[in-house]
Length: 152
Image: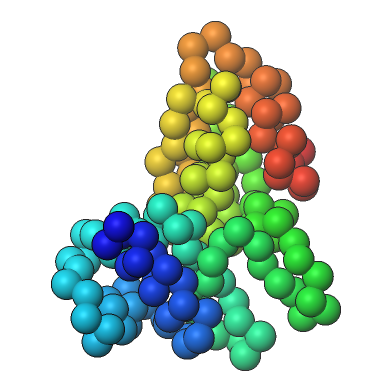
């Protein structure tokens, strides 16, 4: 129950302020009475699919990754904005993203492509994709292109 309340508070803080780093978010939660560690906050950020993305003011701030709203107020899927390229090495694949988007897109891959993808490892702008046994490159691409519109 406490986690759910903390998650709701994190979303409220991100929507109401420009939070540019984890320390700012951690301090905001502490000021609201939460006793939270950096490790817990990192897990919360991953679970909530929070990314650092450009704001209309030209800086980068934490945002909820479910959708990015562009300047014309059109809602765009996160992966259509954040995905840059994919390249294979043997059975493994590496996706390049815009800075700050990798963790959220990896979470999307983990939840939507779990029939073909065993798991992902994400950094700031790179995702390592580990396909399940006997899954071809073509099957990986087909699986990912079902929710990443500009996948080639």
